[in-house]
Every structure is written in C-alpha cells, then in structure tokens.
Amino acid sequence: MKTMSDATKVHIRQAEKADLQSICLLSEEINRHHHQHVPEIFVAQTDHVREEAFWLTLLQGAQSTIFVAENDHDVLGFASVSWSENTAVPFLNVKRICRIGTIVVTEAKRKQGIGENLMNAAIQWGQQQDAHEVRLEVLNFNQDAMRFYERMGFQVMSTILQRAS
Image (cartoon, rainbow, N blue to C red; front, side, top):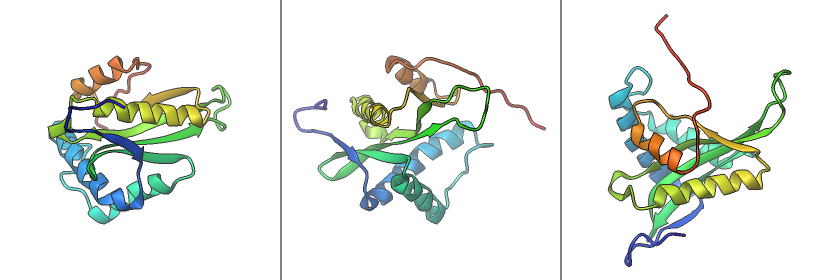
C-alpha cells in the first residue's frame, strides 16, 4: 500500500453494498468526462436506478467484484473487475481472462498512486481467479489513461474500428 502523504492513507478493499452511492457518484464523474469526448456513445446523464442496479450486479456477481479506495471512510476511487472463459468459439484457446471494466479516481485525488493501487488489487484478484491474462479497453481520446495502463505493463493487442451505418 502506498502512502499518499503523511496525512492521507488510502486503503483498498472489496466494495460493499453500502458503497454503491459513492460508486455511482464516481461513475457519473467519469461518465461526464467520456460524454464530453464521445457523446454518441455516452449519455449526458445517467439513470440513477439503472446505474445502481448495474453496479450491484457486478458487486454481487460470482465472476466479478468491485474494489474501492478509501480514506477516512471517503471512497476516492473504484475498479470493477470480472473474469470470463471462452468455451463457445471453437477456434479460440480456452483460457480464463480477467477484465477490468471501469477504473476511476476522483479528479482531485488523481496522480497520487490510488489508481495504481486499485489496478494492483484488480490484477491480484484476477490471479486468484486463475486468470491467464488481464484485459481492458480504453478509448483513443483518453491518452492519460492509455499512458497509465502502459506504465502498468499493458500493451495494445487490438484496435476496434467504427463507422456510421
């Protein structure tokens, strides 16, 4: 665990149902950022009921969890993580893959090591689930996130292209 400063110690733990409101607020924060850059994908404002249900499903899933970073009972960030295993596509190797869905640290606390601690917790969880690798997706506009993931050892393995129909 990194100490952020003499006064600020951040603890990483698995989220609980009581953390859902904080998770939703952080999710809205990152959604606003994504909506500014790709409004054709991300909604301007989320439906709170649907959003809470979405995070609760991940929190309670047999193949998923959420980690939170907290200081003094304040949730400063979270990472959602899940695992899956290809058994349907016959030409792909069957292997367990850990997927990091969302990782966000509140803007005021970024670049203090919290995201790295959340990523390490998610990666360790994947290892405990016998995952062979960890994957995530990042949109091209988000170059800060791309640099962060590269510092964490991630490499580009594919590119997704789109066009209007």
